[in-house]
Length: 314
Image (tube, rainbow, N blue to C red):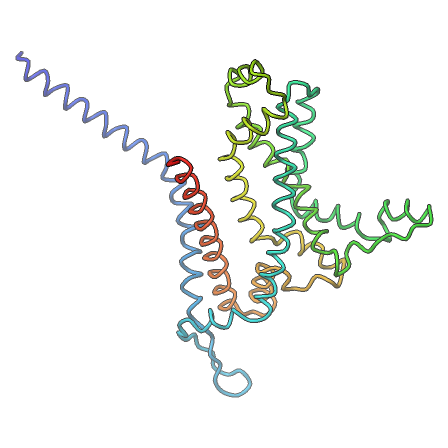
């Protein structure tokens, strides 16, 4: 058998193996791809489709109903005073939540990475555990702690003759909701940053200590700059979660009159879709929130990349 024949046989065998592996790969990802099309892509396109429609009622006593094409009218109507006020409230909520939560996450991660820290396993679990509690459950727990009639903190303050503050009042309700998000989200962000810290080679720390750096200097000048990509990622995730806040104010709403049905954009979407039966306006508002979230995320990443490239050129 000639050399050329052997080479062609090996080539055909290799191509056959490659095709077999390709078919196996497609077979394995097919269920996930089908589920994505059914439960992610299809609802998105359907929402986009109905956001350009509206139900027209003609005749007396709600006689004839027909679905008509209205173009961008639903989008124009979505920018009402309630929606703009909800956006402002959520931005204020984010200004409280994101810096405090990420600051605590970074602090806890640095403390756990310190060689002087003891009981690291217990501390990691204790800090991460609130993240495992569903948002609705944690909101209920904190809601009962906020209510003066059932709160143990109010009972202790009243015992000493101190009037307990109304945490669910209009002046501090944003802080009360942000506190729930901070309690539940700090652990997850801490784990992300702590994992990045553990990936740093120990030789860098040893060289810094030989040069006379203290643990504080190592944290500020070595650890934080190296884990900055992880901090940026957690900031992006936290910002997206802030724009989509829903469970916390929705759960606290029956406990106080200071949270309206349009406190956040998603609450307004829920009210329009399931209480006012206006699914077309809700669809348009959903698209606006999604596009706004995408735009803010893209702008933030563009600014970060521009600054990173500028520092590299220097």
